[in-house]
Length: 302
Image: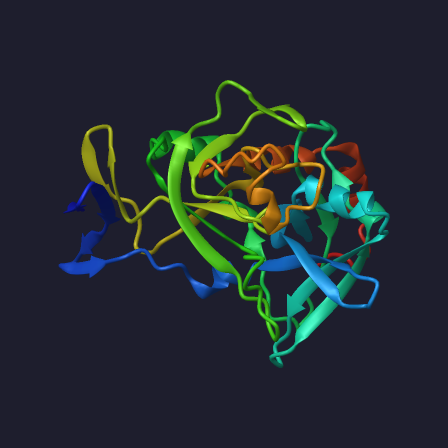
């Protein structure tokens, strides 16, 4: 059921669903927010500055399960370009405190296509850490897109770092809700080069670079002219990774000040999203295949 409320010249769209005569609203599950953490750099005074978002995924390959941290390549490159060799992952701990995981810039692995804005790192979440992995089985595939007629207007949400309110005692990821504005088709020009990407109607502010973007398929959809019950619970498919907004400086760390560029162009409100299939392609690269073949139990979960 879709309701339109007219307020002046503004239309507000609410999507809701009736299941067994009960009104069901989309509610972002806590486990979704727990799959994200913040990327930080260490300042000269030994304090940490959060500059982007990282999220954790678990994938299946033959008999083993492999776990990774994922972010945007330009976030890692931004830290490197500042002459730093450490990438800090700021973690929530189960005892209510903040934890720090130190990684090296050189440990992060990029896609063979230098234009693709993805960086990954083998990463294990230990029992004391209050985070979880997002499963590969819920990644958005071409089959899911076709079967559910995914297209412009479908609802998405982003979870990640809000630079102005990141949390002092714990990471406090925000949620931004929007919709698909354009499906991948003609390549989009960015300062990293031409890329295949989604455009979403959700403002990308400083810190959201590297954030996961989820598609809300909903419990009920109209497919081939018929209203169908999709499932008994909400499943949010991983659509892609926030690259940034138009005018963002991909080769610099995505800080809040970048909402207005040197040419004083305002953030357009449209964000660029690297499709999750690019991450799946990265897993087929020789470097990753060899890494997983030689996987050490300290890095991967059996």
